[in-house]
Length: 123
Figure 1: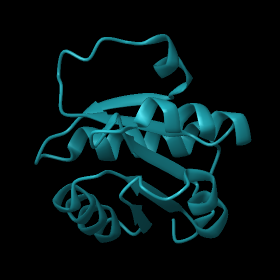
Figure 2: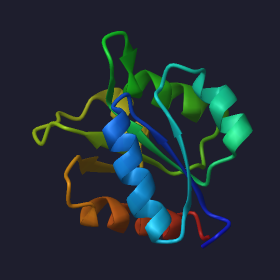
Figure 3: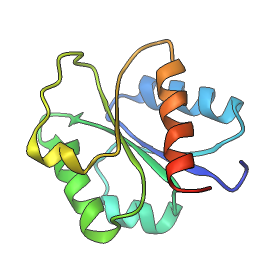
Figure 4: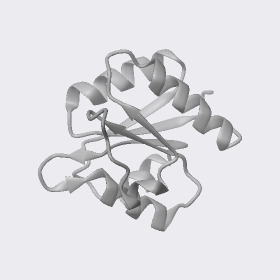
């Protein structure tokens, strides 16, 4: 599992830190981004195995737009969309994501989706 690097992209610092702490406790290497940097530059620098991407990144950023950028560069990397809205309506752009999770202090669902993404990626 040590070769697995997860990139967490979220504009909320406390979410980035919560995800980092919990996933590192499970043995993953975790990099974080607030979504303001160019996502392709971050991915080139961090070379993640999986991306966890917030759907709403501040006022002017959309995780769905970043998802399109990611898919333009890399069709294979698993992407887990994270949202605070449990009634998230699937948008055509979001179809390119592999999994979806609703943000929660209980990260069981997120961790399960990470394992599923790793299995799908055959890592």
